[in-house]
Image 1 (cartoon, protein in one colour):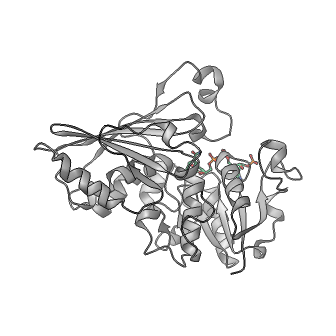
Image 2: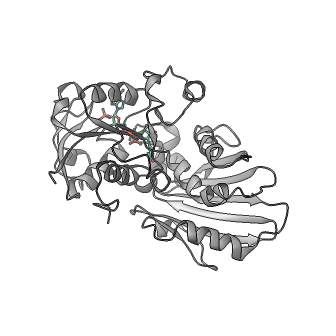
Image 3: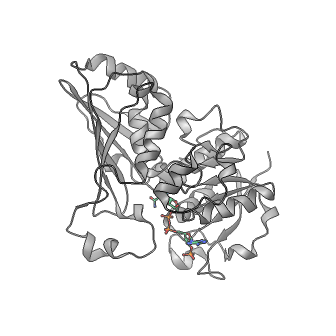
Length: 337
Ligand SMILES: NC(=O)c1ccc[n+]([C@@H]2O[C@H](COP(=O)([O-])OP(=O)(O)OC[C@H]3O[C@@H](n4cnc5c(N)ncnc54)[C@H](OP(=O)(O)O)[C@@H]3O)[C@@H](O)[C@H]2O)c1
């Protein structure tokens, strides 16, 4: 098989940098271009000292026909506009932004406060939560990579939701993310002095943009989808997400049944681990890996699922490469270990 020719739009951001690192080691990929609006003419290594020595080009100067696939590591709206031109050039697209994650354009426009540049593409886009998208990914032209919190929480809830588990009340998600989740563009609330020695909630309740994305997918899975209460926090570490998810039942959970459900759902999965009883998932299980690791704790009517992943890898660039591998027919783990 010839190598796949790949380009990255937005290579100088945190997800773009991770993607450039993974793709430059991928045995079946040839990197063709990496774009920036700010640093054209430099090498990615001038910005990240441990990065591959990739020349950076402005998006206007790339030869769109020189690639088979592009990864969009851009802010929302900029991504969709770039996707349109790539698809018109016959290039497959894996988009890491939120632009193609929603089936209903009104939901996207309400939560992202922009007019969608290409709503006609929403129906075609494959929602790339890889473990649950393998039937739809092969040959896809356009893949919407899920959000980082969303991946953490959906992988944790999928077995229960797909089994139509009876849930009492809302599911409460208490989640923490490292600061890279906010991207590399400087903002006051992610300055070292604001973050170090601090721990702060944000968008608590039902106001974070990943909430409608999570509820959309839960609605695909469960006939009577429960609502989520979602409280994200900024953790003073560079990377990693950990969520404690509280799921109530009207009856006492059967630990053996739920454990069996989870171990069978993820048996044979290379990138999702369910820890044995007595062990708890931590960031140390997952940072710098493409794994989501989860643990189950039973306290009568409340099941606590602890789920962790690296927001830049399994929550972004790693999952994007997993998706690319399935799209083009490579073994899913290629380039990811
Ligand atoms: N960070 C995460 O954990 C994470 C996880 C999952 C998904 N995502 C999503 O992935 C996308 C990238 O996130 P990130 O954290 O990597 O962002 P980031 O660190 O802020 O990087 C953004 C990149 O986009 C480029 N860019 C900014 N504005 C642009 C514009 N108007 N047109 C073209 N290029 C532009 C920047 O280029 P220059 O600065 O070089 O000019 C930079 O390369 C976002 O949509 C984000 O929501 C992020």
